[in-house]
Length: 392
Ligand SMILES: *Cc1c(COP(=O)(O)O)cnc(C)c1O
Image 1 (tube, rainbow, N blue to C red):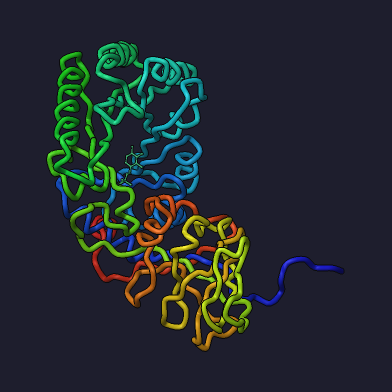
Image 2 (cartoon, rainbow, N blue to C red; image 1 turned 90 degrees about the vertical axis):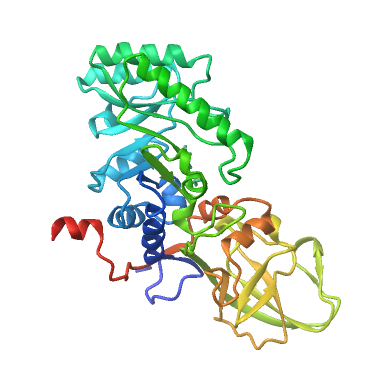
C-alpha cells in the first residue's frame, strides 16, 4: 500500500513561532494606557497569528470586545465558544445577516441600505440586531459623510423604535493617528463629537462610542471615548512614528538551509542574475519564498539571520525559495534561517522587512502563506489575569 504524507516527523521547511506571552504582555500594556475598554482587533486571522489562540490570550489579558470584518470571522469565534461581544464591520447591504444576529454579533452600518438589509434579516428571525453606526469623519473610506449622517441616524432611530435594531454604538476611524499633531486628528475628533451630539439629539443613546486605533490608543487620549480598537500594537510593531512604549515582538518567521554551494567571484544568482558575487563565497538555499509571505520586492535590500550573522539575500526571491550569500560563514544544510524575529539577537524585525518592502508591518504579518506552519509559545507570566481574578 502506498502511503502519502511523511511518516517520520521532520522539522517544517518554514514556520512561524507565535509568542502568546508577548501578545498577553502587549494587551496588558495597552490596556494600562487608557480608562476605556479594549476591543482587540482579531481580523485577518488575528493579523496572521491564528485567531483562536490569540483571541483566548487577549481576552484573558484584559481585552473585553473583539473586532473582525466579516460574518465568517465572527461566526468562527462563536463556533469555538467565544462569548465576548464581537463587532463585525465590513458587509454588503444585501448579505444574509440572520446567522450573525442570531449569534449575537454586533454589526456596523454606514448607509441606509445597510440598515435596511440588517433590519430585514432581523425581522425575519424576530431578533433585534445590535448596530454601530459608522460616521465618516474624514478618512473618506467607510462611514456616512456629514451629508448622509442625518438620514442614517433618523432611519436608525425609526428602526430602533420598530424594535428591529438597537443602536449600541457610534463610531469612526482616524486617518493619521500615528501623527497626533496632524491637523486632521483634531478635526476628526471634532467631527465625531458633532456626529454624536446629533445622534443623541435624535433620540439615540449608544452604549459605546469609539474612534481610536492602536496609534490613537497610545498617542491621542482625547480619542479614547468608551472603546479603543487595538490592532497592530497587540502584535508587536510600535505604531507611533516618534516613540516606543515597550511592545514585544510576537512572531518569528524561520526556515532552514536545504543546500549550500561554494561559487567563484562573478557568479550570477537567481532569476535575471540581478545579483553577482563579488568574490568567492558560499551561497545557501532557503526553503521559503514569496508564496509564503517573504515579499519579492524586498529582495535587493533584505537580510536574514544565519549562524548569528546578518546575511544578504542574493538576487530575486522566488515563489518557494531564495538564496542568501553567507560569505565564509560555516553554514551547513539544516541550519536555521531567521527571516524575522524579536530583534533581540540582532536578527531583522518585521518592521525592518516592512521598510525593505515599502509597506507596513500589517501587510507582512497578514501575508504569511498557508504552507507555513504555526507553533505557539504559551503565556508564561505569573501575572493574575482578569479571568483568574473573577474565578478566584
Ligand atoms: C484594522 C482596524 C483597526 C485596527 O487598527 P490598528 O492601526 O491596526 O490598530 C481599528 N479599526 C478599524 C476600523 C480597522 O479596520
